[in-house]
Length: 170
Image 1 (cartoon, rainbow, N blue to C red):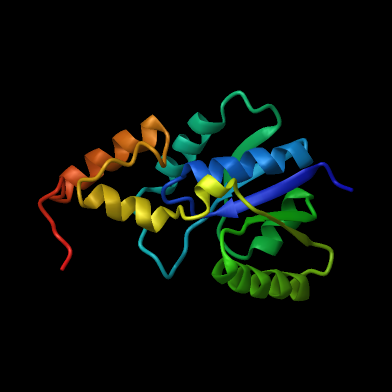
Image 2: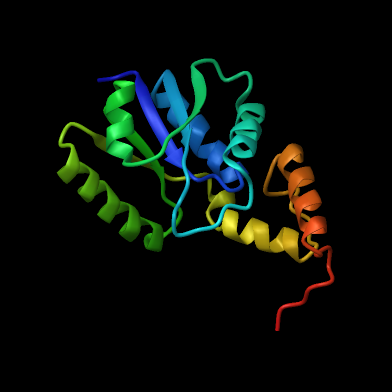
């Protein structure tokens, strides 16, 4: 078994749920790469560099954890890094359906790569980056969901976009 695993995602923003999965993965794999990527179907709230910065900040002190970025197919990136394990977080059945399909496709593309599904602590089972961004844009408190650095960045970004409680959902 390899000692290197890849935990890939957009992490826009990196939440306590992501950090929980990273910690769980790191207990299983002494070397963990948190690989930040872009999703062509989504417009990023934070730049790739900003996301890497907040992840470095959140994981400092975790020996054996490194932060990287990639474009293209995950299986190709995993192969370039010499890993054979991909970490994916599963919160709910809806996550499982999507992640299961992705794992099977990755296996079809590269039979050597295994996907390890990890569940976060139940206190993070509802948490998503999309919801955190929405709360921030509506002027809400995101401190229970993200590190202080991410919270500060979200507040600043929301203020620049004219939020801070001025927008209301209908």
